[in-house]
Length: 235
Image 1: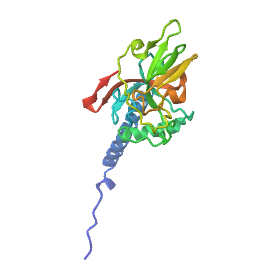
Image 2: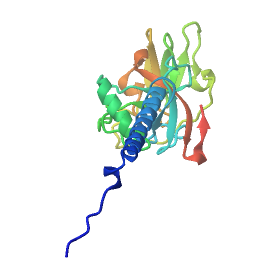
Image 3: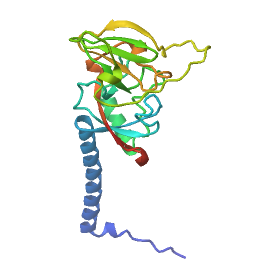
Image 4: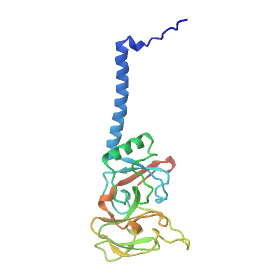
């Protein structure tokens, strides 16, 4: 018994073939246009970052997502800033584009081309505490600052125009204090140098470990944490 051959309507209708191709082309163009718009917007206006550690608690929640403005690269005292990886490596434009593509379709959860297992091998958020020309020293995890034109030291909290809290707790005696020193000798920041600290002062790496951060390492300023919705906060 012969089987009846099913006919494809597109084999007979040129108009339907043309419409199908138009739908496919329109869909692909929409996806590409959306990706291009989002990529340009993130490159020049606003881009999201995924907070993966508790180094900035209570300022930024671990597991949250925040917006960074790349136009605001000149930090002020107290700003939360997104800073380039400190090992000196810079990804190529194609690598950054591919990373943006993956992050776009995974809602910022996967960033395969920019992450590293090294502590200094990935961008990070830190708070700017001291500016170029400031003299600073640290005692009991609190930074004391003497601006260039002043004669006296004041605590970081007295000078900052933005209120914030820091996490300080007793360190076990067996710790070797690498990267978590609570005391620093006096030093003066040079031109284009900024002293940045984590809000979690005991368990985080920052300028106590890397030294002052140069101005060209700043990728933008954190403006808003928008996820989770219970922790929405503007900075």
